[in-house]
Length: 319
Image (tube, rainbow, N blue to C red; front, side, top):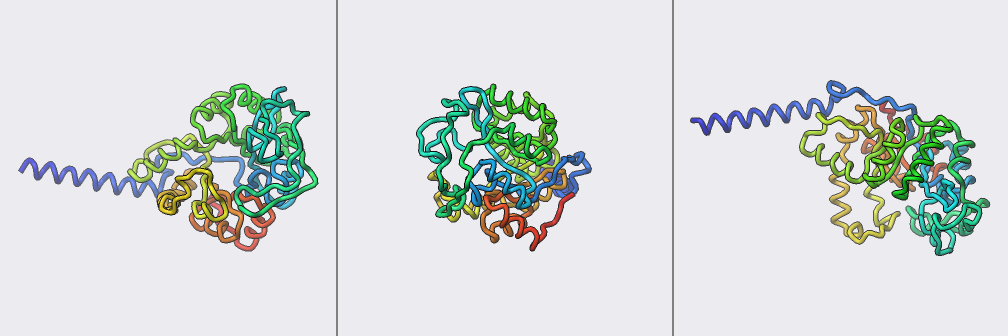
């Protein structure tokens, strides 16, 4: 009889937990105050829109803004003479043909970009442009003072993080500039340097987010992050060919799709005031798929294409 009572109590407790978890997943405001960001971006330009102009150049960023982008995404490095420069790669071989690192050169000695660059997330497609020069983060802040930006810190470099933070403070844009890094150690330093800036989930925190979601614990746990960035898995091995051998396995990509593209997860996050941005979508079918699964924003190398898609198919605004 005692064993049966114990089993019944356990079943009752589990049932109560499941009911509470599901209810709070759909109604998170009962436990959590909704985040209020000063931007809401559906159209995000990856590397300044690297499919339409040479990536990360002033021409690319200017073109993306004129095409209607609502947010610019970029990566930050530090030159040998202490300038914060925008570059995706630390080694310049792919971008310029020179086997040197950004950190080994003075800003004035950085080579020009190649005249024609393959779009990383759209294999077989290339971009060109008149502007082939690297650009300073400060120059972007000056030219686009009210444009939200995602700054990915590409090096675990205390001086780089400090200089980025100081520039953000100098130009009074803490509320519209996002800390981004896949590395938890780097993100800890970013938050310590400037805790007033919104920040994204790192890789480890993203894995924890999924564990919390699938165990039902997510509705009970506070979240410091304001944005979730993630691949749209269906682009992998189609428009984007990954370097990681594990991602070249069809089953792995299928599993990634099933585990991560959960509309109920994205709806829960958006109800808590977070923004979910899926990347890098360079075809209309991928943009449609991203918004359909609950993304609040899409990151693309083609800002004009994305702007036109949003005009034709306005996604819901989760505010």
